[in-house]
Length: 163
Image (tube, rainbow, N blue to C red; front, side, top):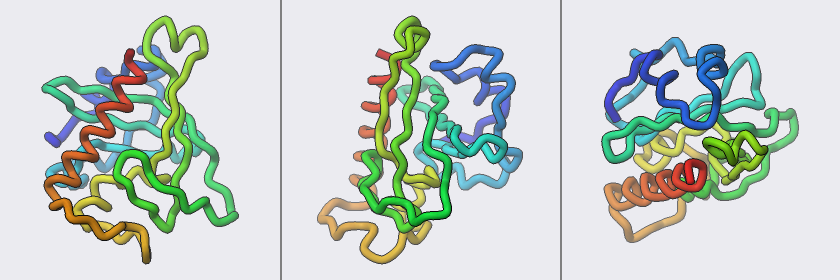
């Protein structure tokens, strides 16, 4: 993924208003992010933990989504499987819900999927972050094929939000 600026990120949101995209928290450490190893940039809002965001570039077009998710609690998070990267991280997965883009979203329609709670799918697939014991299944796919599967799963989720 190519490095993005705060302005590029804010302009890419498809499921929130321009005013909402101007007010949301964008990470200040964009320059330090491992862009070459990211299929998407994902983050949780530190001021509002029930909000998360992701931005990616698919087919030459930037798309960003605002997501709602459960507030991280003190209890052990469920050890489910992420629908995007097929990892079961020790930090758990969360059902993240995106309001649909356009009129459907204005009417309250939304789409959800299970994502790694820390949104580090790209790093787990590449083995750059330890997801914990038993978090990644032994696969016959190469890392490049696993990355492609992750991108395909992410594109399918975005297509459901923007449809």
